[in-house]
Structure formats: C-alpha cells, structure tokens
Amino acid sequence: MWESDIGAFPVSWASQGDEWVFHLSKALVGHEHIRLEGHYGEKVVILGPADETLPSTLRLRPDPAGIRCTVVGDGDDASEDQVRRWCEAAASAAGELGSHNQDYQWQAVLGPNPRRPDVPVPPLAGPARFGPVLLTPGGIQMREWVGSGPAEIRQRRAGYSWPVIASGIVPTYDGTTADLLAKFVVQWTCALLTLLWRQHWLPRIGPQVIAPGSGAPPLRVPQSVGRWDHVEPDSSLPPDFNTYAGTESPLEIPAWAQGAWDVLDSDSTLRTAVGAHYEARGIDFDHPSAAFLGYVAAIEGVGSKLADLTECEICGSHTGARRRFRKALKTALTSKEARELEFAYDLRSATGHDGTLFGTETTLGYGRISAFEYDLRDMFGFTILGEIRNASRLVVTRALMSALGVDVPIE
Image 1: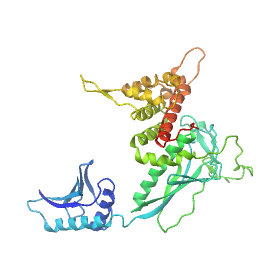
Image 2: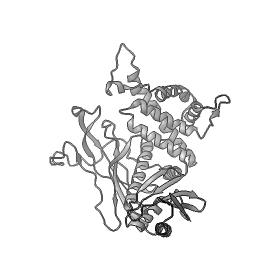
Image 3: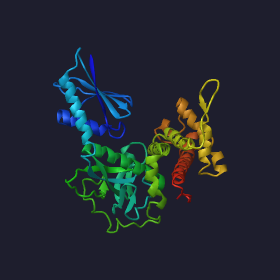
Image 4: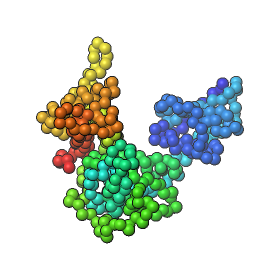
C-alpha cells in the first residue's frame, strides 16, 4: 500500500465539500457520480476508485487550509500518473467552486393534514412572503376521499381543505442538489406553518424543481382527489364551491414570523425544538405515546437554553432534564398551568425508558368512553395529548418570538 500527500486545497469542509466532490468527479470521469468508498463523519472521507484507469482512492481530511488530500493505492511504489490525475482534478475542482451556481425555481402545494377532515382550516388571506418562500392562495377548495380513523376503506369520507401554492428559488450547482434543498425549505416551511396556524401542514404535491431555462406551468390545486378521479370533477359542485363562506378569519403570516427563518438558520437548539414538535405533530394521530414523548422533548429542548444539566460527583451521570422541562413550561404558561403539566415528564419517561404505551395504540387506534370504568387510553388521547401538544406549540413559538425580541400574545 502506498500513499502520496498532494496537499491541502482551499475548500470549506462543511459548506463546500459536496460541491467540490461534484466538480472533482466531473473533472475525473466526466460525470458527478464518483464512488464514495468510505465515510467517517467529520474525520475522513474516501473517494474512488474513479474507474478502471484510476484504481487508487483519495483520502480527505479536514485541514486548517481547507481539505487535505492523500492518494492511496495498492503496491509498493506510488503511481505518478494516478497522483498527477488526482492532483489536477482536485485543483481544478477548487477553482470551479461557485462558478456553476444557477437559480433553480421550485413549487409545491401545501395543505393541512387530510386525516383531520372535521377540523375546518380557512384559506390563505393573500400572497405572503415567508422567509425564502412565497405563499399564494390556491383559490380551490379541494375535496378528497380521506380516512379519519385506522386505514380501512370503509372509514373513508369526503374531506375539504384550502391548500396553498408555495414557490421559491434555490441557488446551487446542479439539479439533484437543488431538489434536496427545495425539500429542506418545504419541510421547514410546513414545520413553521404548523406552529403558526395550529394545524399539521404538509406537502401535498412536490416540491417540483424547474431546471433553469426549461420553464414549467405553475402548479394548480386539484379540484378533486381520490373517489372522484374517474368522473367529471366539477359536475356536482355548486357555482360558489370555491368561494370561502366560513366564519373563521383567513390565514395570515404574523408580522413577527418573517424573521423566524433567520432564527432557524442561526440557532440549532431552536431548530431542533421546532423539528421535534413538527415530527410529533405528524404521528400523534396514529402513535400518540411516541408523539407525547416528542412534544415533551421539544419543550425540554427549549429548556436546555434556560438550565444546565448537573453532573453527579459519584457516578458522572447528568441530571436536571426535568428542571429544564419545568423552566420551559413557565415561559409560555402560567405557574398553575405549568405545575399541572409537570406529570407529563413521568409519562414521557415511561415511554422513553421502557416503551410504555398510554394511548389507543394497543386497540388499533379505537377507544371507548365508559360510564363505569376510567380508561386512561381514552383520556390520554382526548385530553392529555392535546394539553402537551398545545404546551409544546406555545413554548416553542414563544422561544422563537423571544429570539426575535418580540413580546406579543400568541395567536
């Protein structure tokens, strides 16, 4: 086995590494899919072999000057040709950084979770800029055949919602990366909308990335989905079906929330808490105990900014997570409300440490309210889960507002 150090190249390991490998691959083999031989987190990445004419590999390590590269091959003596090819490609790739960026447009349809057809969600009031995303009213009251209970066909019924069109631009160097970046933006848009609008929002179509210069028709919200796919979709709809006639005010983005994206970019702790709340929101219909744990974790995550863990002098373990939970609750709830929810940490611990299930998971999601027997499973789903869900939303939202220096009532 031989090794040859070809130097360090001015490439940021975290922010430019993937793009550099993209250009390195293009320089070596004419396409962007060079093989990743090994990956060891932030310590070592091994690339190659590129093809049969270049059987050696390139070992990458972080370096104060950028990325340090070492060519590694079989045999006793280094191959000057292979070392030269790797070196030239590495230098060429470093020179290409940033020079191939283009604006990739994307669009998606976002809407409230269809599993909640009985919860009315009004349409968006008007076009709104939300961080890097433009939200536009879809203008269509979409009807779809949805399920509100366990996945049985006979449980399905008509649901109605007012989805919105989301669009934006991601500047990057290739379409595959653009697609991933667009998904990232849509994920966090839905997570923030879920906090702001109190309903679980998720992508219904897309995101679809549009290659620069190709053009694409704008996305439209479908009028009907599911049961009506094979019939004339508008034949049975009244003329005013797509005119909002509800009593709740249309949805709006609060003025303070314009800066929420900046908080997510700069504060990893709050980003984690927002993500935990959103993931819990997505599973609390079918997996209430796991969702409960997620909501408590989101609250505890906010509390990590308010209290440090204490290390036990005897065993070295850390304690104080419950204290973090309590402190975080008090940022958004009254002292009385916070005290009444302290028991939630015990339920969280039972699920997290020994897998205890408190909801209706053991009865396929079905429950019953008996006049003669107290059933914790029903109370958990109807009351306790909703309380911790609301507390998580309030705590995480208040943390975002505090990071922005905003002190107004949470809607």
